[in-house]
Image (cartoon, rainbow over all chains, first blue to last red; front, top):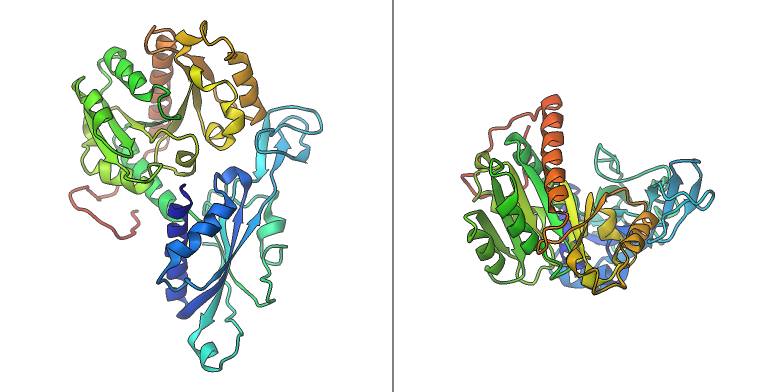
Length: 133
Length: 274
């Protein structure tokens, strides 16, 4: 069960983002997981409340989006959907393919609550964007 | 995976995860802070750092993975005894508890560092970094990392190794690559270990294991080997020597930018080196 270790890594990232942006708390986290990342979405969800206790993100809702498995054939170039243990080209049956989606383990986005937002007692979250790291 | 930031965005998944994509909007409709960081960024950063240490000293690091009891330690013992004596070996052992495996290695006069992971089911890059504090890499040519016996969790954690070798022992059955695709996809070399048992356990078909590996688009070579009967050991040693040469050639063409950091201190902060 390595999902707890991954949650702890996630929490460290969330704390850094919140500190960087002067946020009071984090209300929503969106994580993208591919089936070939080796991480079980439900186990990650179960581990999250344990890992987040006492942190800036302990009340956050965690949304996990499962990404599809897609391969591109090295021979015919066709892109096709695939199963975790059948990564062959659906067009020509070739097994020499390249995975183009399905092994992601990404923190996609977060929604921050800032102090002034809370003072106004409104639910609006802050808006900000960062570029790619 | 994206080489710039490790975020593994490709044209195959970007429609799903880039700003404006299906998964980007939050349910409340509020604009979100886009992050797009790999969840294991911290681990991967340390792994890269470990790899730089190995490269600076021209050390090849091989991560051995398998289920418990597939013969990783026995393979290491046979390797220590028979591999070219000019190649200096060190071993980092990962187990939940005990120093048993490190003791087995030390009996052959080889430096072995035991990492007791407690309840953790895998090694991570930070544990290897700590272990490297106790290893003078200038004294070695190869470091074998024997990961925790487990076909699931170790696959997700980069340690800073150059190569992953996965053992699939004959008693386990030939369909393990189909059952544990994440692990076998990460493998650079698959060893069908305990091959001396093939005549008895004849329901294990090496051909079928190969087919399951092809199904997960693995291009890793496969070798049947037995530490006990010695069959396949010569090919295993040839492969190791070839990998050492390949790495050395690579480093000659791509020299490591040296950094002044030495392992005389312990640090728990994140840092970067130039």
